[in-house]
Length: 636
Image (cartoon, rainbow, N blue to C red; front, side, top):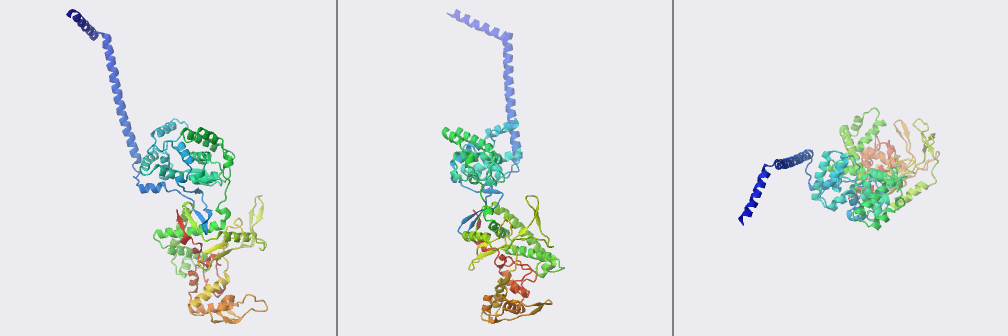
């Protein structure tokens, strides 16, 4: 029984001895150990290399973003919501006039007011994992980086919607690793503070969508919907949404419109891009196969918006006046916010322009600008400084008005304005057109479309303002016979003698206030002669002929003013001037800002004569009547 077991044990002993002494076995063991040791060494090198690479990348990342401050919630909120929006103007009664002129049209909208089809199209195209990631998609970044290194066409970008928002609203479009790393860091921080819907809403409001049908640059989904298809953002169909969602990748190439407005001859690039978006929407499960097939058959050309008119087309005079007045109001607000006296700054701005006029037109012959300023008790250095300062505020205000999202409400009555404008344009009683001439009487000419010289027409112009006396607000005005002929507003910009309007303002009102006359005081409307600067001055009344003068004898001041008789006004003004030399101050208090030289002091001023004739707007307050200050110049 024990013998077989002993034999079996001896067999294994001999086998072990032979295994241990066999050169083949020993070689195999050596090779195995060598392979194992090599594997361990290689694995160690890989691990060390990985840690080294990770440390290097981390250090490189830290070095690049070391100057990027840690932004607070408030700062990030302000940055991502800081996109421009077109300002809108209104007639009285909140009737829209239109958007103010700007190179960029942009309208803010809420996510809930946006078509779900557009939201789905944007996510499917720009960031299919938007609702899953925390700001960045490492796989997408790696894929995009590889495609860039290998010079392959990029099928999709490496940036998430959050990263694109950060790049456009906080950083710049600079192409560098530093900017990219900062973008990643800030995207993670934005995702920490804001919900996905807040991020998506901000992206849809700031993204560029090319041009609208009028050729203007557009940002924001709401502007794109109206500018490209003529519908509200919440009314976009699936194919329309796909077209708009495809635009941000290359907005001006895919845009269907030319830079001067109107449809491009070839719109295939944008349509092909829209089809790619539709296929992505189908792949992501946002639309069914039937919806895809139906959308691919959509006739885009038939549904593109037609070129639309802007405020300058329909209401050019009104548009210009609103812009000018709003800029002044906003400039004064900006000056006030910076601690300046806005009225003082604005008045000095106007006073500087007046003394420059006096200097250029030699109202005070031989005097320098500084000497003229001293005549008016102005400090020339202060005046110049305030002029430049307010001019800068005006420039900044104009920029803010273009894209600040203001709502500007005026007192202009649309129906009355349209009627007055129509009457002015269609009136047949104007004098025949004259031709413009230079100071020497030579005809002015311009080159026509055929290359030939043609004389410049100078038609009779018209300007009028309708004011509500009780409040001083402007109800309507006529700026001229056509903005295409002259862009001057003949109601507010072009000067002319204001005539008998001056009698109650410069003569009777100050005389009544100073107690020189009463409404029932007797004044003489009789022939009047006086030598002024060596010349005979003999005013008469309307209706006087070469053979007979129209005088009315003795009458009350009330009757003289009501009938606008000239001689009584001269008589009262002479008495007023002998009593005080501050009569012109009454005009300044009433908003006349273009008085120069001896305006308001000479006898002829009582009848409306002045060195620099007054535009209509100078006979009443220059800003208040449009009520922009009082009613609202406000961002939403």
